Amino acid sequence: MKFEHKMRGNVSLGVNPIGCKQEVKNQINYVKEQGSYEGPKKVLIIGASSSYGLATRISLAFGAGADTIGVSFEKGPKSEKNLGTAGWYNNIYFKQAAEAEGLVAKNFVQDAFSHETKQDVINYIKNELKDKIDLVVYSLASGIRIDPDTGERINSVIKSIDQTVVGPNVNIQKQEFYEQVLEPATEKEIADTVNVMGGEDWLLWMEALKEADVLAEGAQTVNYSYLGSDLNKPYYGDGTLGQAKADCEVKAAKIDDLLTDINGRATIVVATAVTTKASSVIPFFPVYCMGLYRVMEDNGTHETPIMHQDRIYRDMLYGDKPEYDEKGRLRPDNWELDPEVQSATEALIKKINGDNFNSDLTGYGIFMKEYMNLSGFDVDGYEEEDITIEDLLALEY
Ligand code: NAI
Image (cartoon, rainbow, N blue to C red; front, side, top):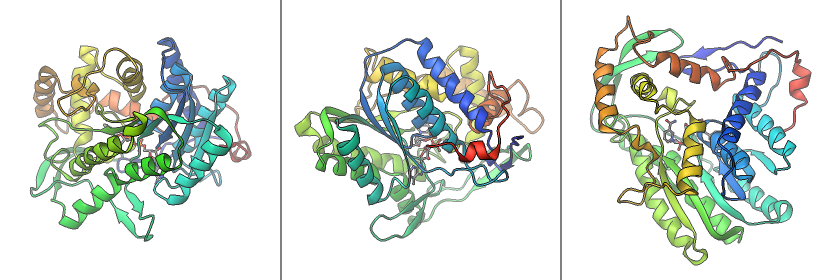
């Protein structure tokens, strides 16, 4: 069977399941090369199937020997023309590799926003895992939330607030560099984005887990944020997503209170900009990444999700090099926000145009390789395998 990469704008549609298997393996190997570290032993990851959530899971399982429960929303294969999503295969191949090393790896492929999913996970922890959870990672990114009480469908939008933003972007499918105009969000769009991408569902998860008494003494919970810099503030930090991230900080304080009696803690981890399914569709962001990656790669500080997450858990959250800011947020993004990195990125972005955006002047090649890797294409060490649709349909998650 041949696997074909397809795109609609900056959304990747095709998938190579064998490439996903190799990509998961490469990430596992990266973690193993760093050696083992002391960390949590029972971990729940909400949004576990790709990018930051998957990298978190791989680091904790293969670096700290953690048993993991992963919640994600992915589609399995139906036919040769409809192979499902990369995250579906990431879940399966992660599970196979973890189980081969004697670790528990349970996958829930269902809507994390629903009450049912929370209850299913709690039942599993009580009846099958039979141990308490010592880390809950919230790494969900979604454009839609179905309200768990009313069934209403709420959409998040990535827009600016109170200002029209004009700047360069790249249409990856058409290989086109163009000027994008981003109109500001309405009040309803802002509120809806906070509803979907803010901290409400994180708080609901933590309340349900606490209420069910499945959190261990000293349990921690983590939520990934992005603050960015002046270069992306107009459309991110000062935009709808920035509002949603601010809401996560409000909810972190509530969760901290909730966990006081078990000496637990909620931490906002401000993570660095990386190429993911979610970030490739943020307006202007691909061009920011192309500038930033060139500068950081040349400095030797560019990180992929697995490098970043492994550093967060190994060195910072469970290590001896944590760096917190005055608001108590963990700041592994300080390599990205280094003033010299930012000014070099700004200078480079000013030079990017339609003739050179995909040349070595920029980090285009780095961005594109990482973008293709997300769907199992262009993966290092990839070898073709003779595989049929029946083989794929028989895979169990
Ligand atoms: P992603 O799109 O690669 O992964 C999102 C995950 O959420 C997937 O596992 C997906 O299956 C799951 N998911 C989505 N809707 C779901 C639902 N209804 N039920 C269950 N699972 C669902 O996203 P990415 O980029 O890894 O983002 C994760 C978090 O990291 C987000 O909060 C994002 O804002 C944050 N972050 C991302 C940065 C970036 O540059 N990509 C930078 C800093 C923070």
